[in-house]
Amino acid sequence: MNAPPAKSIASPVTLTGRALFSGVDSSLTVRPAPSRTGLVIRRLGTDTPATLDHLSDTPAHPAFAGLRPRCTSLGNPPTAMTEHALATLAGLGITDAILECDAGELPIGDGSSATLTRAILDAGIETLGPPVEPMVLESAVEYRRDDTLITAEPHHEIDYRYQLDYGPDSPVTPATARWLGDPDDFAASIAPARTFSTEQEARRAAAAGLFESFAPSDLLVIGPDGPIDNSLRFPDECARHKLLDLIGDLALLGRPFIARVHARRSGHADTHAFCRMVRGAISPRT
Image (cartoon, rainbow, N blue to C red):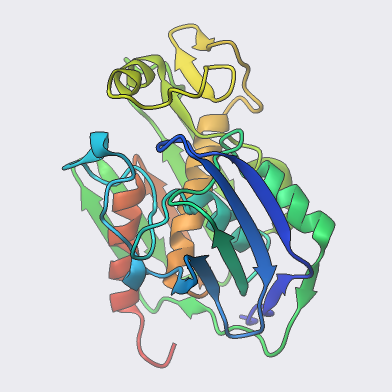
């Protein structure tokens, strides 16, 4: 198994837009970083490693108080909705970068990673110093919660799968999405997949004061007859986006995770817990 090279973005890129949960105007600048920096969130002059040890359980919106996390928040004070940016960097093989933000939540854009992915590819990616020692497993790891399952098995390359199945009464079609670690495939097939909600979920969120600045044409809302005022980019777009979220949350391990991972019906809190299990199963020498 070859250790992947350390990489960073060649020059800074900036994205601006509205935040999904808080509704504030927000900007994200991804900056180059030297080898061994890792992925770092920079806010209010403070650098926070984008790792498990710096997860925040502060709700991204008061409506989420007492609920399982609906996104990945890092730092204190927390920066919410970091998972799409982390997925972009991990998907493109970038190991070292500064994610500088000026608000408590990253801009949502169209709900995908496509814009940031294109901007980074246009800016260029540079190979840095020595390769990054990946995380590898010696034995399988399994996380279960009700009908949620995440497993990881030792493997010689990245093989991540997400199985989406909300049940027979959901308007979201069951599907499975897979990524084998190729940056080009990530850019073409996973980055464009948008975050989504069902019409019922969107109505409940609106009643709680969320998404006031967005319409179904801005984000992907799935009704009984399919997307409302919108259309799917892929027949299995929802499964691909859940895979994107999985890639972003696995990046919290701090190093490339080389394994065969299968996630079923999992969310952010599940992947956070799974990552803690993985870290506990990795011997100190790896």
